[in-house]
Amino acid sequence: MHTTIHHLLALWATLPEIVRTLVWILIITIGVILCVAFLTLWERKVIGWMQLRRGPNRVRIFGLLPGLGQPFADVFKLLTKEVVVPSGASQFLFRIAPALALVPALAAWAVIPLSPELVVSKANAGLLYLLALSSMGVYGIILAGWSANSKYAMLGAMRSAAQMVAYEIAMGFALVGVLMAAGSMNLGDIVRHQQGGFLAWNWFWLFPLFVVYFIAGVAETNRAPFDVAEGESEIVAGFHVEYSGIAFALFFLAEYANMILISALTAVFFFGGWISPVAGYPLIGHTFLADPSFFWLGLKVFVFLFLFLWLRATFPRYRYDQIMRLGWKALIPVTLVWIGVEMVMAAIHIGPWARPWFH
Amino acid sequence: MRPTGEAEAVLVQILFYLFATLLVAGALGVISARNPVYSVLFLVFSFINSAAIWLLVEAEFLAIVLVLVYVGAVMVLFLFVVMMLDINLAEIRQGFTRFAWLGWITAAALIVEIVGVIWRHGLGGVDVGRGFVSEPANYSNTLALGRVLYTRYAYPFELAAVLLVVAIVAAIALTLRRRPGMKVQDVSRQVAVRAEERLRVVKVSAEKRS
Image 1 (tube, rainbow over the protein chains, first blue to last red):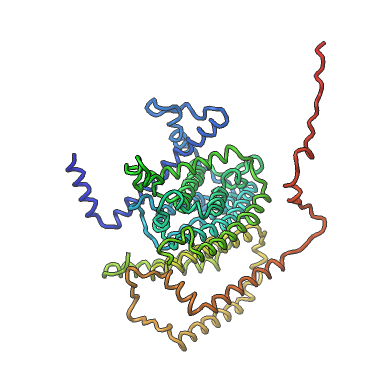
Image 2: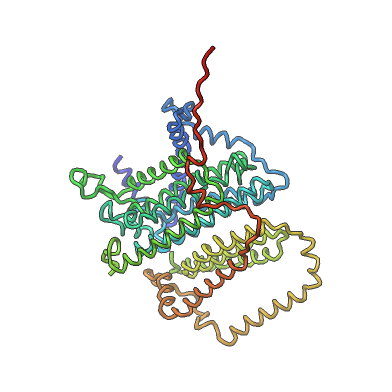
């Protein structure tokens, strides 16, 4: 048994770099898609519990845990349904739009450091790459809305486009603050520069930016309370009203993949990514819990995902003009002011700027 | 992966011609598409291909910024506007053949200018015969760009920033107009509202059961 593993590891090391990268890409993509599947179930369960219901509880796998098989049941149902293309729709764009929504959400994982060693690409401009990709996600939604040749879909696409353009600016400025504190655009370096305990993480010195980033992230993913793009009570289902079957499932997948992505990025930028919060504490400070690992990143991502679900179960939907006002007149000024505060902190060398690489 | 060996150099060549062909095809699509929405999408496609070509010469900062600024922001707004316009295509195409000579002259003038600049100034010291020389592994294009931008070209950089601010102010000032009779919500009043002003709790005495 032991020798088999050794043989496999030796074989792995002899593979050319491009093959190993491809295998990692495949593993991460499948991992994200599986996470999405169970996130949909977890969301329905959590919101059910918050509303004193049980949530999905019929489909089991191997007779285990009521509801565990629900995601698979949903996927098979959607796979076997017909994809209806409306007459008068722009055929090519209608078919390609779901893919355009999904691809950026998956491609962004290339630069996210999952553990100290494991990252597909150690790109120096990783943060810029993320900004570029997240700005491309809007195309899938706009084109879906336009190509369907439906008024509701068009309205949803317009709302969504305006909202995403507005909140991207706040998001970008929040990341400028992170960039200033880390002194690097490489995501691995951004995590490494937060080392030194719970209070050394960026959230402490950049707290307003963390709040702005997360709110903008919720708005970017078109999640409640910013889900006017779907707005089922006003415009039926917004941009994906004409989509059925697996084409609809792709939009669903893209939305949830984006939620996981935003949670992972919040963890990386403001909560130390894979760094352990208990390193150096007595008793547990010397166990495996103190080691930086994927476990800690996963836990942080899970907490932020729960926050997404909690927000959805708690808040009523914003009105469209309120969304615009919050984005342009509240969040963007906050980030601008805090970048000014950061300049002062950098000048007098406190917080992250007291660290050796800033001298 | 840097182009070091012979095989990688060939691969880079193949990729360059692939992206260049797609870029030209996309550019042709921009001017030949019947629907303006498709034109905008062809333009997006061209931008992405030129970003890929920039990546091939290891200018990753420029490549990503091109995608971020043009694809991510400018073209989204283009698309936004084009989708909402109700354009009558037949009306636009009416004068096409009549004014075609104007287009040809403009294109010819542009080509003459480009060739003239290259004729007079060369390619700015780039030795075309040697092919592309890659930088050492620890070289950062972003860092190098920042270094010249904030030292040698600090004044032109600041000047460009001022110009952009002027343009923003002008654009807002030109489109800002106050139309009378519009129903606008007063946000401060909305926020300042209290429950007592909107809600009246009435005590109703219960009826006696007969």
